[in-house]
Image (cartoon, rainbow, N blue to C red; front, side):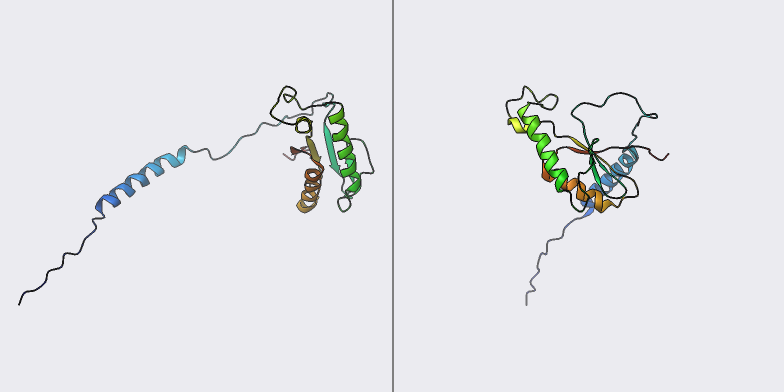
Length: 157
């Protein structure tokens, strides 16, 4: 009687473990080198001066009424239709007057309407709920504002 001897393949995992240990050591050495925070320098005092003439600031008051720069009566967070209509009018006037964003005047790869200055800042009290501010941002996007930024005033230290 002859016995059949089967050769089963055996995987040698020693080189794999060696590679994993080397990678572990590399990541352990590299981990402390990554930055743990991002420092931002904000102005310490309010700077007096005139804002840019094309600056649009949408203020959300504590009673949830909206204001565009100094214009009141722009609706509320629940009914922002007046604000949307006014922004559409401002952007249309800027297109007619060729009030382009800085650096966009000479570009030929974008349309005229994409060159228009459409930056809008949102200013809201800290006590306002996040969802209310998000609604205002959605309205601004729908009106064609881009980019949308947040204005920081009276920061707590």
